[in-house]
Image: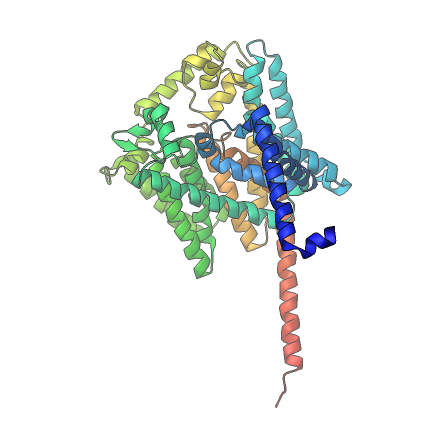
Length: 497
């Protein structure tokens, strides 16, 4: 019968039609009985299981996927509000760590034997201890601890076990620059062509209250808000600028110069003041690490000139973006004075609370859970203030110790790398990381998407920098040997007069 059907096209068409009709009937009956969401969930089950198996087999896939999602998580939430994207990232990172541990060998686990991991585990243990804080509550703690320590430790442990190939460094940096360019282009669309329907819904709900100042819209792209988007752009601007300065060849220098201009204008349309300190502090660190007298003098004069123009003159005051940058340097700015007043009030409240008021209990999150205290009455605009009021002076000390250790490790290792490209890459990463730490005093940018995962991966790369340098040097040596071999063969078979 099968052989006959294969020879008869009409019969094959009849069988196919009956099979399609039967499948349609079964699908229609299932929808009628259990509803479309259940059917869609069942249909998505096999691909989802296949992806889970892939993540367990290749843990780097989960890290890469969550890393990419982080750049667009704000936009995804506005397009499809019902999708729990944060939970998806949780699952991907857990899968990555489980897969990394299952596939780890003895030599792989040795990479976890580092002071960075021990300090980080101390911070994680302290945040878990905060669950017993008498001022805290379990539900806010559960939602807050992810950004405090869980994401960080998952990325660090999985990354040290799996991201040791030079290919991964290049992939993560290139993916970052590409995603930053996409964010900038979407921000330009918002600024000059108007908002899309999903952006407009967010704008009409509450975005206008904080993103429409003096008749100007602050672009927010696919990020949670303009402040976070501006920080992403300033961070990318600093890295591209450093690479443009360091490049010796004309074409790469022009490429990074174009990226610098793109990202800087993307930063400008965000109308954010705090991220300006990413550029300022990061560039100062760059001048120190380079230890080039001419560059230090020229770069220092340029930075001082830019600061002087913004701080002590009115040049460009007619431009809204310049107005916003200038206001960030004004110590009499009402917003800055309000932050100082809030910090003084918090200091009184925290005097009798050395372990803080509980993770997740401050600011908007605390209000979202119906909490009423001194921590929810006032705005919290600084990441360090948030860590301080929720985990106390003890928690802030541990947290800052981990951050500073990573910064010192990054500076120390970047200064000792031999391969020019790898050294330039890591100098850019170190300067960007320190810039984010400085700017986090004025904004809660360190632990928000996409900068949280970007910073955690950056710290992992600090720990792996010498390994990347070794691979790059070996790769370059192999290419030189091949080139010498080609020249010797060419010389051997070339007739001589």
